[in-house]
Length: 386
Ligand code: COS
Picture 1 (tube, protein in one colour):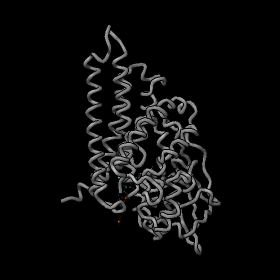
Picture 2 (cartoon, helix red, strand yellow):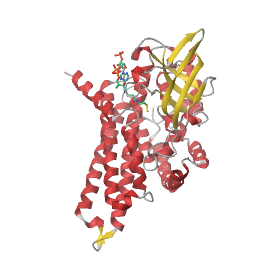
Picture 3 (cartoon, rainbow, N blue to C red):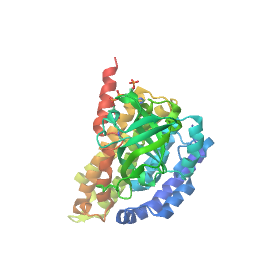
């Protein structure tokens, strides 16, 4: 699946212009008001951004992974909350249905996902099950043609906007094999939302708890129709998600570098632009080299991702995805830190974008699997090999 090259070039140029002319100028508003303006959300829908990864047969644009990472690089060049509005629709919220859903589930949900009429969100994490996702406790008990769900999901991105969740719950015994993935409409009786989380950064993104008390969901809403496959679905979805977080990290690093180089050209000390000092150049150079290394890795892994069937997991590709997530999210943390350093005291003042990005990028090393989870996956893969 891929968009033809010519249409893709046009789309990419449109996204670049949208980021530059619409989103970057709205960053201060976003920071102040903690919400994405409704007219921007409407423009996103009109541009088809909610359906970037949904196949054309279901009304989407049908990007390949190699194309998706390029779009996410561009979206990384502005505040993360903008992408977050549709990020779960093109990523972790809907990919489970796309990868493992039955034909009926795809036909019912994907067209609404593509148009943005339905916002989907991904609910895996719980108060006592974060990194150890296979230990999740939310129960799903079979009762006739329905499952009855009880439990709490935590830090769920876009839960307040969501019309439905891809939600992992335990239908069987302990461990990964007892977990099923459900499609849970947000208006199901017994489902309620917690209060909005107050976060360090990423203002304008929405996360909160999802609480289920005797929430009845049709058995037909198990993704793929077969219980016990939900953990694998979640891991496959996260593989693609993690690669896209890596692409976003590279885009954000490139924006921070641009901001830092501009400041270094304009700011004068000791009678000349600080960019003329080699110690400033060294910081910019380290960031540039690390950004290019990360971006090359992302593009290479994306090609390997595209070379396999979308719903099939490949341990070597998963290992490489984790290398990309580990390297790129840590890389953008260092780039943001140097960006603040190049700005000096001004970098600590929230008039400058680097102060905001410094806080925003901290989350990239945590969500969709911490750096330590990526290390674990890479380490295990190496020890499995001959
Ligand atoms: N694709 C498909 N299947 C996968 C997979 C992948 N990438 N990774 C693991 N699996 C399968 C395994 O093959 C195994 O299946 P079998 O029992 O049939 O062999 C099953 O899933 C369990 O895998 P594993 O034994 O590796 O599970 P662990 O409990 O050891 O967990 C980690 C592994 C820690 C890597 C996993 O729990 C994880 O990624 N945690 C972080 C969760 C996360 O990212 N949370 C963020 C929430 S979204 S913001």
